[in-house]
Length: 180
Image (cartoon, rainbow, N blue to C red; front, side):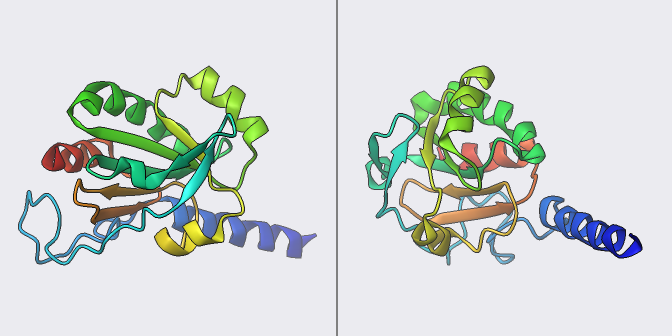
């Protein structure tokens, strides 16, 4: 019995380390980039050569979002930190969508059957795609250890930042505004 509790405790601790942000570790942001810079000079190109299914089983090409600022969020319905960020992303899509922001949620570690009613209940107003069993997407943006993982991509298709775990609304908004 004690062994089970020890294993469960270690699992919970590991999950906490994956989902709780540690200051200074939430992205690809180059430390040499000046404060307020929209994107580091050495930002890597984002791989947008994927076609994923939306929640209605329609094909959506990520390349169709080129020229837009993209907030690419990997999430699941059971993910607590994801549920904190979803209202922020809804607000960002409403506030900045007309200026060229596209929030895209990529469902992982979950099912579309659970995501459809969840998205309706939460009134998710942004593009939702299924990344379930898509190792190619994981390879392109990962490793995706834990959820959420959120990537901010510039209009030029560069990965400007990668947030692993819960980040702050202000940080996301600052990065979005700098790229619009």
